[in-house]
Image 1 (cartoon, helix red, strand yellow):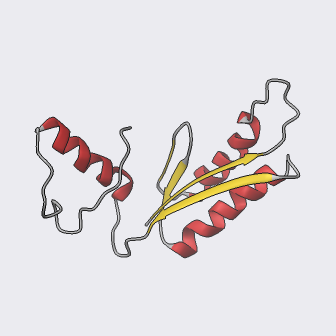
Image 2: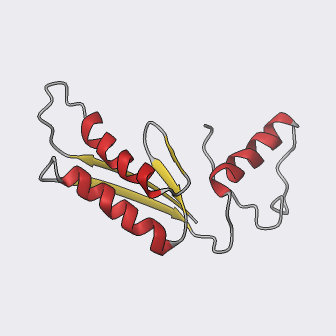
Length: 120
């Protein structure tokens, strides 16, 4: 299962309104978890089971709460029990179609291949 989240302080002491220090603390928590993850400019995506991922997201949120009295959390999940390797797999399937000029398959492509991916 994939969990994409964004956590950020709603206030910052930085004159430029940069949130990078607080966000870096959240990313440290994710990296320390040992779970497969990827951080982009807007979200961090973690792959794992509910019981593995939710404590990490909470700890990352708590890390940001330590520097701001108010925090914004956005969470999106792709819940497909029994699947793994989807952190790269979803993107790889789209890239494969793009590289090989494959048209959309009205049947949905690979069995269970109903990916939602925005170009990386």
